[in-house]
Image 1 (cartoon, rainbow, N blue to C red):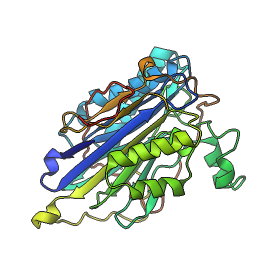
Image 2 (image 1 turned 180 degrees about the horizontal axis):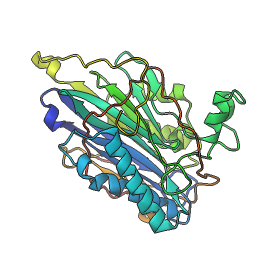
Image 3 (image 1 turned 135 degrees about the vertical axis):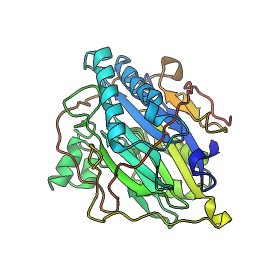
Length: 348
């Protein structure tokens, strides 16, 4: 678990971060990768099998880590900046794998607009980003890019039927393969008591949102929440790799009498235009902002096999959740940590 201030936002904001990944009970390889260091908290779920998915997710995270506009200590990236990084990662994956492998990407970048912190959430594929408010409401911020999501939106199946549909693992957007790697974006003011959850579909394919909500809300520390969620997913079947990041945000300025209200965005703006208008597990580490954590699936971790019938293709952009504000050209910052996957949990 990492407990740190966001440098440029001190003394206003304190972040506490938990993270972990597990290859599950059926995969031979762990093809998930993640980056969990202020300001970037993102999960990439590789697909392709024969280690290709692992390569795709690792290249995606590596590209995020190397991006200058996402360097630690900066909070000035825009949605357009992040889309450019995603396009770079998409090209690198295609070049390395011949477009035979891909990866999802979901998560949030902490940015600053007029000295006020915001979550800039980005999503490609069916990994997910949730927000648990201090009032106890769990909201899925990201919108899945998947065949079953399209069927639900079209009224052809119910959300419950989507959980067991034979095409539930087929994604309609991905980096490295298919024709659409454009991300959807949402911009949300950081509120005191926020808890963000970023996860691969190895979690959400095993647990209903109600169970995720219960576990997320009943654990005081992010790392405890991470461990509880991963354990529950494994006990429910553990059929895929499971990666979880939990980030708590505390408005430290409230204690100092520096509380400031985040500017409200137009309610009709739901998404941001991309142009700016059991297996081996790695647990979180205690440390500073410079330590953070980047996790990549490796053979040493206990691997994961090909992601079954996942495939990428075209899909029209989804509309964001009604309670999400559109992302604008606000600044953002990124992480740069390295963590080798292992079977150990612990604090650093």
